[in-house]
Image (cartoon, rainbow, N blue to C red; front, side):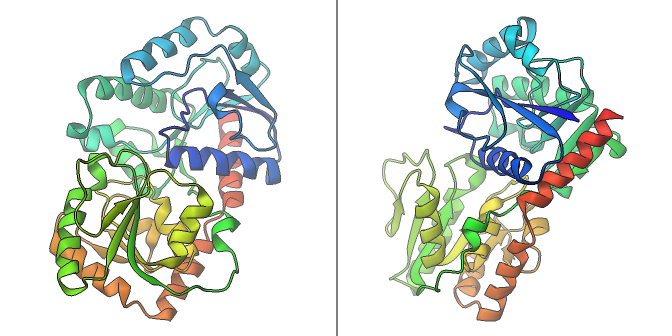
Length: 353
């Protein structure tokens, strides 16, 4: 079967988990996929598809902001040109970043990463809510098959969008072998790690309040932030921001941190939780969104609305016994991109019937 992946709305500058998903899926399809694949990508994402045959859309503007993106996408919708031709030979077209462009008359699969704009509308501008409603919700309703990245997102999609459960499928993210390296264990250091952009739902303010409580009893403790957007005028005492870091640096931080603290209020998956576990890092994480599903029994969960609960859970994570750390590593190793790719291929087969 011939399958095309259209990735024209992927922006590696801001995509975060979506970019990890696309990279992991494409590389795995190149390793274990049984179909013939072609990927269509914007010019700033030409390196994400691994060994898959790839068409780079040099003529498509790389835009930021919902209004400018909407204009670009409208042009692709009504004048797909050569990009539409790139999909013409496909038997199934998959839109891993949800927005179905360029349009096709072939059977389609859409990946739905979350429904945050419906669950937490105040986190978005009116323009962004309109954009998501038009290009995400309608895409899921109109697709032949829908992939969700967790069972939690699947349940929300069925409830909020009225989707037929028969055509909504779960394909979890994977953890690359890179994070599960067998390098010797290094000594844990007195710092907490939180890898997340400074979006409101990432809940940094409550984390700072909890960290201040922890510092009262542990004055040596530090909090290290990674990810973009940390442009506060000043950070609290003991808090430092590394900005965007590469994977090697992030893995080193996971391996040395006393614990990962992950207080996000909303996650469709929560991949840093598994990456940290894979590196042998104790995890304290929010009991919110898909995080309990993904973390299983290997993380210490807390109420993310309570700084006191965050502080208590972090204290427990810092004292986590080795056997529970080992449980986390085994748990993370059960999530593989190869199995995710096989799950996607089952959805492609369903769409082609």
